[in-house]
Length: 493
Ligand code: FAD
Image 1 (cartoon, rainbow, N blue to C red):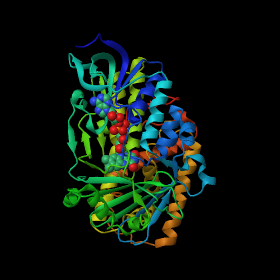
Image 2: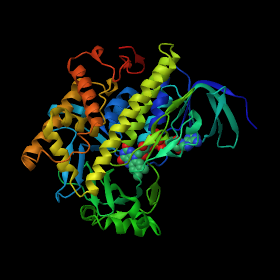
Image 3: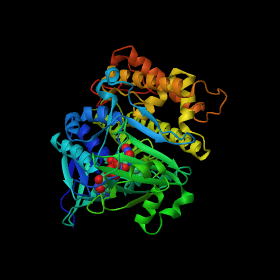
Image 4: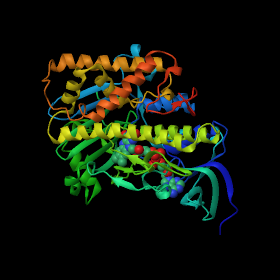
């Protein structure tokens, strides 16, 4: 039986980083928000390597920067790659020097059980009604518009809730994403399988102990993420052709794949696999690269993995989830305030979200392509950085998650210092390591018309930032909107 229906302004389904962010940023504007989560937190999730955009931009907006800093997560200054033909690992840092870049030059490697719980408790603190152990089964539709959801609580009791907007943030297992007339389209290109577990006692990279380490090998690549002084998250991503290597006994499969990656093998030489508790399981994930045909419909919007995911390399998942949550919250807040109409607000949401997704998609495709072609991505990236400043900046923006240089990413002064810092670092690497490179090499990604367009926009946005005041923010698209001064709504330029 269904108990009497309740009414909220907004119902958010799923309390991962996407859901907690969206719920909190709508509640901050005084709206009544219900957040429904199937599990009881803390709960396990993969996706432990974060980008500066999330840690400084989103966490800043949410007001959890200090709490996240106090949680004891591993500071991540950048990434170290052993990839392509270069036998030596390559590192990039979010900043050349802390002096130049200030506090926004780093991110964190996080245990998602802890990080996601911080965001959820924060949402509750900001006034969101949080209900855990509540599984949403379907959306309620009336006259072609989504007007609520039905859910089952932990006692098996069914409930109906009405709302002006339903936000689907229920991740890759979403049951309701089709509610906005949307279909999931799986990538033809990214068809990888991941197998992962946890180790105690793995070594740390001597010069950059907090960096994520990624090592390519014959069947794919390995991630090595230092979660604490002793605990390391280790996973192997294999391509479809090697997917059979992941079948059968999982422990055997994982260990034998890791044995084929010499860098990781060395780091794990004295380590022991965790075999108990939540980190004791070896997990497998596949079919995780997809894009929904629509990100919103009347009364409903998709954020995070409910809408799309590319691939684990370069850690874009939590960034895309929280960034899309911000864009969705802005749209909802603007419509509920009666400022700008729904179509315009959500078109802005979808355009910006697709653009950010597209950026990572194209970038990562080239990254894998170069690997398949046995050419070093690093070499290619450095060739690219020699071309023009804007291409270099595009690279740095991208891997920091600040490609859009959104107002939410806060203090533009320090963000600018960060970008300049990393740009200098990369320039230095180009000069010292490889000198002049062949100019006529084929650069499939960075010379594509797509990237040209993206970089043009970035230069434009950055130019606006450099001129000083936020009032100068230019819309990203013709006829587009800009963020309000507090970052929580859309405004006319
Ligand atoms: P989730 O974190 O999945 O949260 C969704 C929530 O919804 C869950 O808590 C779930 O319990 C709840 N839910 C589901 N169904 C219902 C329902 N019916 N009713 C109510 N609640 C429901 N990202 C990174 O940033 N860095 C990385 O290093 C990284 N590594 C990855 C490695 C692999 C192998 C994979 C597959 C992904 C990786 N990701 C990484 C991506 C990352 O895991 C996701 O992008 C991120 O967790 C998405 O956040 P979200 O809030 O959209 O969804």
